[in-house]
Structures are given as structure tokens and as C-alpha cells.
Image 1 (cartoon, rainbow, N blue to C red):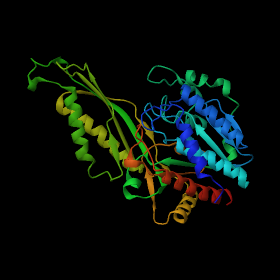
Image 2 (cartoon, rainbow, N blue to C red; image 1 turned 180 degrees about the vertical axis):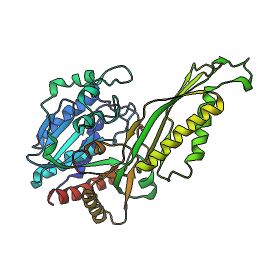
Image 3 (cartoon, helix red, strand yellow; image 1 turned 45 degrees about the vertical axis):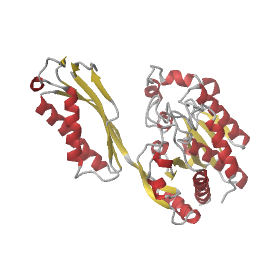
Length: 400
């Protein structure tokens, strides 16, 4: 195994947590282009340079620690959710830093990275999607956060730090270590998971419109209640999905906008999000058919009108078989019988980079399956176990 230092690794993880520490447990508030995010990226660039890497910051604010020549890239992102955990993304970034340092000592070409705006202050994995060519910089610059700030305005805050572009052709592949953000490894008391694929996503907004009216004087049989349409839709898809989905399939309505939103008014309009995720593109398509048919049936049945937004569609991303095999061999060597192969239900930067190079991912447990919250945590022994598995795998990949 290349010479990683677990104590230094954990110390760096905790130091990164200090940038934007929330004061609530180990929670962190470090959204893209915030003061805390920029300070963390300055610190990270200094660590790369001190390790003997070429510290580079691209026009998006992504921070790179580049080994000379062709190299294997290891990393993730260091921005967080508005109420974020200390390990989401940060774990992969510090794994990249520690492995790149060890690579310098061992004479192995390993580069490291922290991508910008993975958590979606402005868009979905904005930094890695623009860098990988999945979206244009012009389109990204027009994105706005919830306060109306554009991506262009955000990245202008780091303009003085930019050193230049990074050519994707200099990398042979990408490996990302991440917390699972789910309960399976923790419940099974397993130490790591080798990711087989990242699920695909379908996401749209459905709007039912009825008749806004007085809540006290409108008889129940005369109401065109838009909220009831949404509730009927939820019941209908639960029933119709039953023979299509698997235990790994998930669907969510995470946002509901009720108009006008008064205790004494029958809602005239209800807009709500509908998102579903699965690793099988054909199943995602069958679910889309059910979603559209069910919404239309509810509208006809209730006398409501129906509008559906344009759908966001991201296809499932399989991990590279050779990189997967290296991770699996390292996991069995380090942790015999205490690991599994598993799907990722969350999106990650590896999905963006799969357009350019072979990619793979390794998961460590999330205590109680909690993430995107101040309570997010992982046992330090599991963090170190993940680092050691990654070190074995990266060494095998880099010397193959």
C-alpha cells in the first residue's frame, strides 16, 4: 500500500470542517462561492502546493493538485448544502489530497481535485458538468441561486485566484470516495461499498388548477380543490408503480406550492415536484408513462386542468469494470467479508466525468443513514478503512 498517513488524513478532514463550522455538532455551512468556501479552497490549494503538486484553480473555481504527466485523478467536492454535513464531498477531497501526497512519496502519478458547486446552489454538479462538456459555461453563467445571484456573479468572487484551464486528457481515470448517504452499510455493519452504478433521475413539476373559492361557503360536492388532485395522484402512482419498481427504486415529491395558501380558501392551484430514480433506464421510462397517465386520469376524474413542465432526465451511469475490480480486490484484501457491491442512489461528480474517462466510486457508512444534515457522521475507523482500501486500489490502478 502506498504510504498514507491516517492521522494526518483525519486532522485534515477536521481542519476542512473548520471552514464554515455551524456550531451545531459537526455541521458545516459552506455553499459554493461563499466566504467559507473560498477560504477552504485557498487552504486546499496551499496543501496541494506544499505536497509538491501543481496547484491550479480553473475559471469555475475548481481546485486541482496536478501530478506531472498522465495521472489518475482522485477527489470530490468541498462545497456543502445550506445545512451540510462535514463529510459529504469533503471525505473524497481529503482522500485525494492524502493519496496525491503519498503518490509523490512513492513516485506514482496521482492528482487531486475539489469540484465547485456540486451541491447545487446554482445547478446540478455545475463545476464538473461544465468541465466535462455536459453543459456550456454560458448556460451555467445564467443559472441563479434562490436569492437571485447568478453563477457568473458567484465565480467572479474567485476570479483573482484563477490560474488556468485543466485539460481532461491528462487523466487516465477518476476515483471518488464518498459517504454512502444511506443506511445499508451502517445497518449491515459493513465497512465499505464498491459502487456498481449511479442511478438515473427523472424530475418534473406537475400543476393542477381548479377553482379558488371560500372554504366556509363552498359545498364539498361543488369544489374543484387542486390539493385533492395532488393527493389523488400520489395515491394512484403508489398503486400503479407496485408491479414496476424494485426495492432500490425511489420516488419523491419534495416541494409543494399551494395557491393562495390560506386557511380559509379552497386551493385553486397546486404545483408539486415529482422525481424518480432507478438504475435501469427502461424502468425510468415505464415510470414516466405511469406518471403522465396518472396525472391525466386525475385531471379528467376531478375536473382540474393539468400542466406539466419540461422533464429533467439524467441517465444511469455504470462504473468502469476494471476500476471496480481494483476496488473490490482491495476491499477484500483489507476487509474480508465486510464490504459489498452497491448502487448509488445519489448523484456525484463521477457521473459527470464518465463522459471523459473511466470512473469508479467507493462508499463508507453513514451513521443512521443521515446526510445533508448537521447530524451527518461516520466512525473514524470507517473513514480510515475507506482510505486504506482506496490506497490499495489506487496503487494497483496506477501501476497497471
